[in-house]
Image 1 (cartoon, helix red, strand yellow):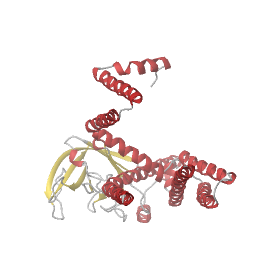
Image 2: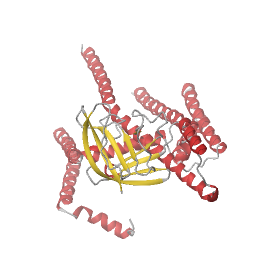
Image 3: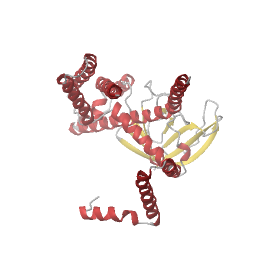
Image 4: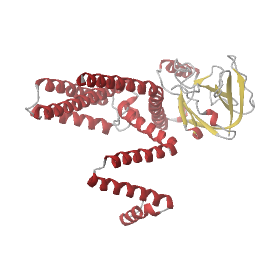
Length: 216
Length: 192
């Protein structure tokens, strides 16, 4: 009888232990996914940085008299961008919230909110004079919530964008909310180069927040 | 960082007396230590339970006060483990290969190992070493510098080889740990 009781207790303990492990796994899966994404992102940025360094070394060796950008070159570059599977063309960093994240070209299939910080179709690249570089990403708890800490930003905070081996520095000048209707109106100074970040408003399912940065 | 050895020792000695809080912490730990030693003599179960509860309480208090920092530290630890798994640097990778090699040589030379154990160990270690050889071959053919991790992992083939190597290595280590745990338990039961 005692042995039977012991067996039942032992089995109950095993079942309890199993459920405990499953519970821990279920709870920790999202934070672990987020950490994994961060680790992969670090490596992607390291590869991006390493490629910039190697490209710069090559440029140093080239005779600058022959350097000219032709429409054909641009087309080839665009074609290469489409073929590239996950190579970054630039990087956004916001030191205050320790955000460092790369972005792919507009044409890349990975320029998608489910994979990356996404460049809006209407956006100008950072090297366009008086242009508006628009980036969008999720916020929340998911591992793809790259803009989950944007709510901590205040007017005057700085951000930088590295693109084509040039770093563009910006300062936050305006934050405003708009209803989620599928479109967004951007209010900015057209005489200044700007960076616009768009994400869902924190703890609000019906609004989105727009952060306008102006170049310093 | 640039202290001499004597300065380092002096700093270490004066560390617990820097503020009232540090003296308090020192006293708590000394009392805890004395209680543990004293209880070894008395072997009182009540004291044992109370001390364990006190230790847990003390560290829970620390966790409560420094929860954000502890979460950050834990995240960093998990990220370091993930980095070692997904993108190990070449030193770590070679270290796993050396461990694998030592296990293989030990298994070949050791006679008191069952055949099944030998077969499983050979399978894991040979696959691991084969993948490492492939890794080196690919690095040579692609003319890659192995010092820079970014240089290695931008090649999908290299990434896949290292990833599978790590999986095989972890399986080998888990197998070895389970085997030794079961073996020791089995031997104990046999002796009883």
